[in-house]
Image (cartoon, rainbow over all chains, first blue to last red; front, top):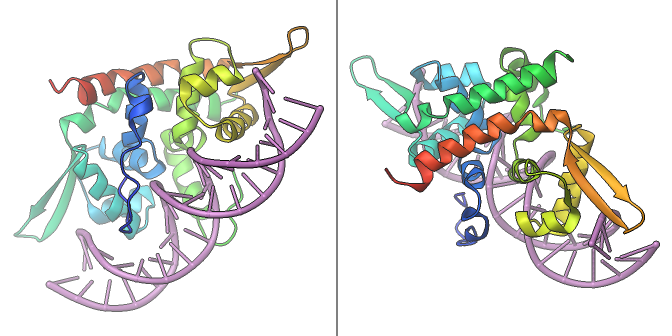
Amino acid sequence: MKPRTGSGAEAVEEKNSEACPVVEAVEEIGSRWRLIILHDLQEGEKRFNQLEKSTGASSSTLSRVLDDLEELGLVRRRVEESPIASYYRLTPKGEALSPALEELADWSEEWLEEEV
Amino acid sequence: MKPRTGSGAEAVEEKNSEACPVVEAVEEIGSRWRLIILHDLQEGEKRFNQLEKSTGASSSTLSRVLDDLEELGLVRRRVEESPIASYYRLTPKGEALSPALEELADWSEEWLEEEV
DNA sequence: CGGCATCCCTTTTGATACTG
DNA sequence: CAGTATCAAAAGGGATGCCG
């Protein structure tokens, strides 16, 4: 979504967007760590290194993804001063993904774990 | 799923797999075209070039993704002889994703389209 | 502890061209 | 029509190191 390097690959996203809402959703949250972190935060507010441990993401990845998620309005950062610390939690928009993630979890349990 | 030569991502995958079904789901279907094609096929059986048009994927991409999806047991190919043609449709496993995709669509409509 | 920068590898996608 | 092959590029991700 965001080119880390300077050059431009702008404006080529219009074609599918109109027809299919799923496509738009996929554009926003359709990557391994985005989904995983989003899912992890459904449990509630967490700190940076809590996420590092619970998700297994590297700090650089976590940093980038959290940044993206914040920009997309899915996650919100809160900085505490007294015991200096950062907290991340879902916005309503992020929380609203819960049903979708649950469905995904259900599907996974039915088709990937127990070979029912 | 696929061999990662070189860097060590193996341990991470194991770690998350146990704890989180969502992660496993993401591993299987978590890419733009996988999701899009899966969603497109929820409508029913389609032909190669129908998919090309409706999804906007290039033929090479479509070919590869369809191939992957077939290997994963999410999609099934059927070749017709009389009017020579190939048809793709979802397997039960693929159809079972429908609720998840719908939830995703709902979310998208609520949070991405109408800026309520 | 939280997090950015850099470098580099892998995966995914695309463009293009070429077959049965 | 349905694909495959190739080549190239974008995006995702990880390792490491540095910094407040």
